[in-house]
Structures are given as structure tokens and as C-alpha cells.
Length: 195
Image (tube, rainbow, N blue to C red; front, side, top):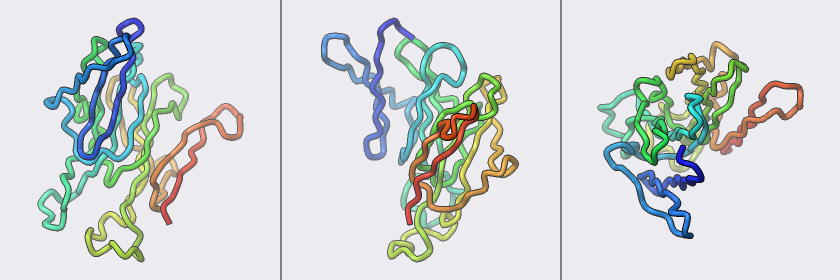
């Protein structure tokens, strides 16, 4: 990362914005719309997943399992992972990393869940409960989206392992905090639900 460089990363409606601190009290809009291509960013996490000393950016979004679904009112091309190049630019590494398919993503966090020195990515999902007055606007396929845990392989790629590791929650998650709640040396997950 450029010494003393401060980034401001924003999710604004259906777009992500990158502002770089000019170190004079102002910011410069450095958004590259050819790189930041996600739609419907719902949650974000910042962390150094590739251990190169600069902060990378994960954005949750909507990934529809059926791209031809006529009920889809929003674009649904999935999550994004933007790798910080260290010079004020980012690169979309979503497909190489294997983190696109996350259903209707919301809150997320970077954390090293297996203590291997590489950050993993966790995010919650869901759109509406079956009893919601708004359910007629969305297909039922988003009612029971599972949480996602993308475990780092240590080489820039991730493997989705939520079910294998016992994280099979399908409630309506909206936000998440990943921290050592019990102070016992391992990470815990606190999920904020929409009920």
C-alpha cells in the first residue's frame, strides 16, 4: 500500500465507489467502473486476504441460481472480491478466488477461522421470510439461503465449506460480527437476523 494512503470505500445504491485521500483534507474519486462491476452491493468486508500488506475488498451481492428467472428484478451476478494492487487500483479476482456464488448476500467479514494464517470470508444471506408482505415480489428460492463460509486455500482461491463445518443456518441474516466472544482463542460468529 502507498505509505500513508487512506482509501474510502463506499457502497452507494447499485454501485461501489473508491475515493483516495489526497492528504490535504480532500478525496479523489478513483472509481474504475471497468473493475467495480458488482450490482446490488449489500455488505462489505475489508481485509488482507492475500497477505501482501494492503487491504482488499469483498462485496456481497445477489447471485441467482437461475439467470433466466423472469422474476428477477435486480441484476444477480453475485459477490465480488477486489484485490488491492497496492498502487491505488484494484483488480476483480472474483472468479479466480471462487467466491461469486453466495445467494442473496448481506453482512460479511474477513477472519482466519481455521488459524492457518490466511483470512477466510463469511457472509449471511436471505431476502424475505415466507410470511413477509413483500414476498410476492421475489421467488421463494431466497427464503432459505444458507450462510456461506469461503475458506482460503492459501493460494488466492477459496473453497465454500459452510455445511461441512456445521454452519448450516438458513435464517434471514442481515449482518454479522466475527470475533472471539468467549476469549478462548478461536473465532465466534454473531449473526443479526431479520424476523
